[in-house]
Length: 89
Image 1 (tube, rainbow, N blue to C red):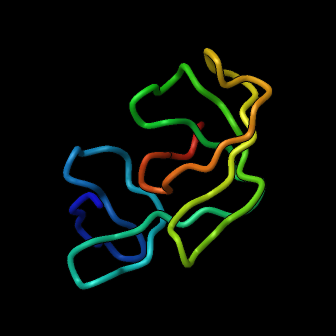
Image 2: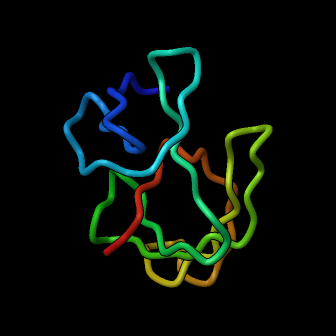
Image 3: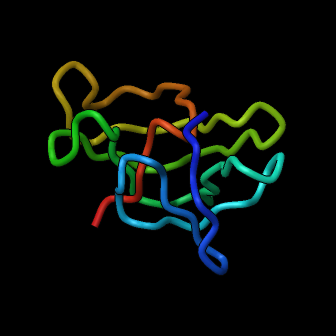
């Protein structure tokens, strides 16, 4: 899990990416929270992937994503760690 700094009701990870809503865990780490229907993309492939959250598994820190755009992802559904995703714009 990435180290992040809590800023009000948002956090920013150590990579300096845009702040996203999060919940505090263990005082120093944040877990990004998503809701069903949120548009997302993979952090390492920003602009190259687009999907939508179809299920949230809070106890595991994972989400199920239905991918619309992405090499070898389009049309598939995968389970992803919430920390590996960011909201797409």
